[in-house]
Length: 194
Image (cartoon, rainbow, N blue to C red; front, side, top):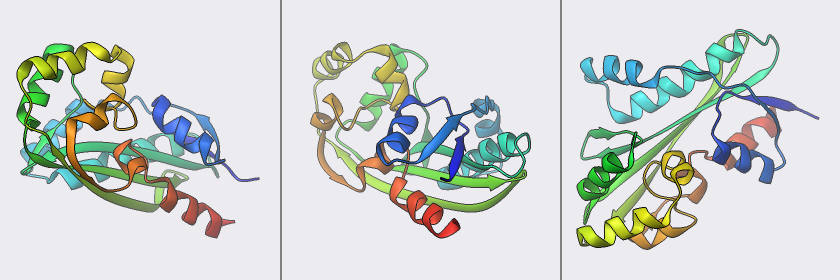
C-alpha cells in the first residue's frame, strides 16, 4: 500500500488524509512562512503564487531528507481583493481579520505539492469563494469566544465545518479545499501513481 509523508503539523490536514484512507506519516517542514511570504510580497507575487511556492518549499524540504518517498506539502491563504491575509497570531489579530472580511467576498486558496527526491512531481491549486455576512463587532467577538485557540490557529479565522459556517452568506467551493487540502485531486494523482 502506498504511503506518503505529510510535511505539515496541521491536525486538520492529517485528519482529512486519514478520513480518505491515504496512509501517511507526519514530518513537519518547519519552514519560516512569514519570511518567505514577506520576500514574495516584495516581489509582488500574487496570493496564489505565494500559496503554491510555500506548498512546494515544504514538500521539497522534507522530500530531500527521505529519498524515494512521496512528500505532500500544502499551504492555504486568504485573498481579499489581492491582499494576502495570513493566519492570526493571537485573538486580537483574529478579530481584526474578521472585521476586514466582514460583509465582503474573499477567496481561500489552497495549494498542494507532491515531491520526490527533493523535486516537485505534481501540484494543484484550488480556490473557494466565500462571502461573509455583515455582522456587528459584538457578534464577531461572540463567535471568537466560542472557539478554542487550537481551532482558531488551525483554520485561518474560521472553522468551516463548525461554528465558522454561520459567518457566511454564501460559500462556493469544496469544503476540503477550505479546510486546507483539496484531497480529491491528491487521491486521483496517487491512484494513477501506483
